[in-house]
Length: 238
Image 1 (cartoon, rainbow, N blue to C red):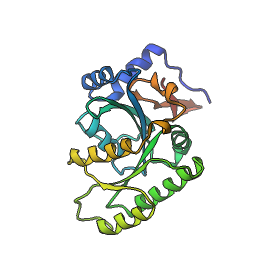
Image 2 (cartoon, rainbow, N blue to C red):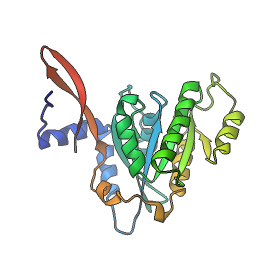
Image 3 (tube, rainbow, N blue to C red):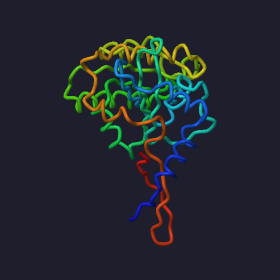
Image 4 (cartoon, helix red, strand yellow):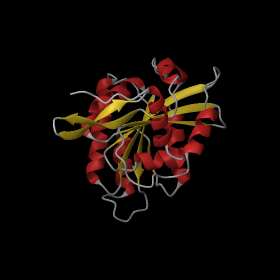
């Protein structure tokens, strides 16, 4: 099985196309250049498929939700908080079990986590419980900043009352915030809480490695020719 080879110039073009909201995205990268005195925090957003992770992130960073659903593998966003004093790398991850390897690496390397489920999808809540256990296992049950976010608040099709979910998550010793793509204030509260939980001495040892990566898609799907068939697999683009 042979991967298609993408020239470095082509990779740059791919990144520009896939970042979305192109002019706004590029200016946000410029504003987010790393200064030595900045606090630099890395937050990974985890959760099941189609729970709204990408929509929440793009509403926060760009103010424009995706126009259509595209499966995420790994996308990186950069955002400044606290009046520009904190640079946040936000990793959008896949909810598919197919990409569990990437999630495991993110859990190893990132400073804090936002676990997203949909209040209308009971299965997605159980996936959040599994992710919490996975984080505890990989990080050897050390204290790790985690915020649980219940997306699609206000939807009358929710599977359980907010009070019940809050009680369960608080019993885990984790903060719980409900949010919606229509309420940017609630999205901001989720990310502000996650960043606030990260102490300076908790910043990952992989910080220098991540510092040189621009905003954009970290992996893309590429076609692979196998005999008379074309299948798709992932390729790293940086």
